[in-house]
Every structure is written in C-alpha cells, then in structure tokens.
Image (cartoon, rainbow, N blue to C red; front, side, top):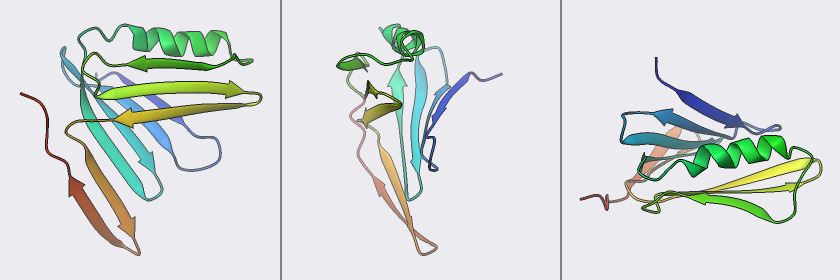
Length: 117
C-alpha cells in the first residue's frame, strides 16, 4: 500500500498531497481549482519534514513566526504560519515541474525542463 499524506484547505478545493514513490523519492502535488503542480522530491536528508507537521500539530493553538522545511536539493520548500484561528501553508516546488491550468473546459499545460542529472 502506498503511503499518502494530504492537507486540504478548509474553504475551497485546494490541497497538498505527498505520496511515497520509492525509497529515494516521493511525489509532492498541489491542487487548486485552476492549477495543478507536482514534482518528484528526493528523500535524502528529508527527515525534518515529518517533524514540521508534528510540531504544527503539537502547537495547534498557534506560534510566532514561520516554521519552514526545505528538501536537501531545494525541490520543495514548505513554510507554515499560524495566526489564530487560521493556519497558512505555503509551498514552493522546483525542478521537473508540470503546471496544468483549466479554463472554460480547455486545458493548457506547461512542462518545465528537469534539472535532475
């Protein structure tokens, strides 16, 4: 069974999903009404990502400043701020990024070149 971690926005269709692919990579996806972005993220030195979400859950009443984690090679950065009663999570995806936009039933797709060796 594939391990999946998903965070959904409270008021709209936005979500972030992390899916285990192999021992060396996981897939990070961001979905919003008119945008989908995804990137393969290396797992090397990624142990702090679980701690980020554990800390957010432990401090559910809020905290001062930002809590941030970045992958070793910079493909993914997750930053969170808590401003009672809201939690804001910002994601930055890089490398091998595919963006898809729907507009009036037609789709537009951009493929960014991969920086992987």
